[in-house]
Image 1: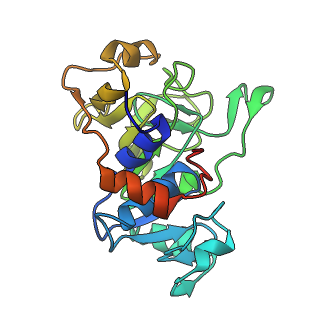
Image 2: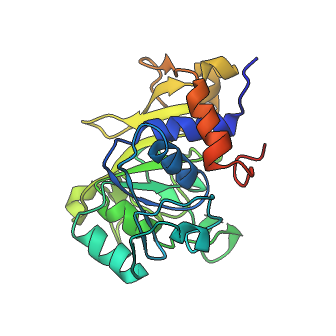
Length: 261
């Protein structure tokens, strides 16, 4: 039996996708946990941006949100949301956008707005915030979310953040994002079951690795995905090492704000 939780595995898997020196625009929750874990371990030169205007944040304690004063610690510059979400993104200065969501489809389109019809939703969420801007203009995006059939869907109920193939208005035809004038695109999806990536030619999601040491099977991933997903090249993900777990538990989130120890 593993000595770590599914949330910890997700945070570590997300951190491993981050390269040293990348500029990352990150939201709160698991995206921030993963990014801080990378910065405190293998990617110390990572530059963390937060939507509220924090540049190169290096918090001593984990912020609750992107506007938490904890995030100001050792920040060399505090700008505005317009400067970070506008100037940095529009000038292609953001290497990675790290996002969560309620639904995702095979092309990496994200819904964080409503479940059901927009005018009469079953559930209404907080909406885009900066998620649409980030998905549109970051050089690549990483998505992290629970892996359930109701979340990995054939078609998102509402397209909050564009993926590789988007629906053209008003006819709803699927077109490549480049035809809509968008650059970048989804790089990976980290879920509670594994790590998915996208085929270069078709831009369809496939399983790259799975949490085998936590009892996850490829059949379980297929059963919890509402569209056909290729598992033929999937490999067991390397287990967390002691260093990753120690940094996560003792440095990044010792209070269990998001990890819920």
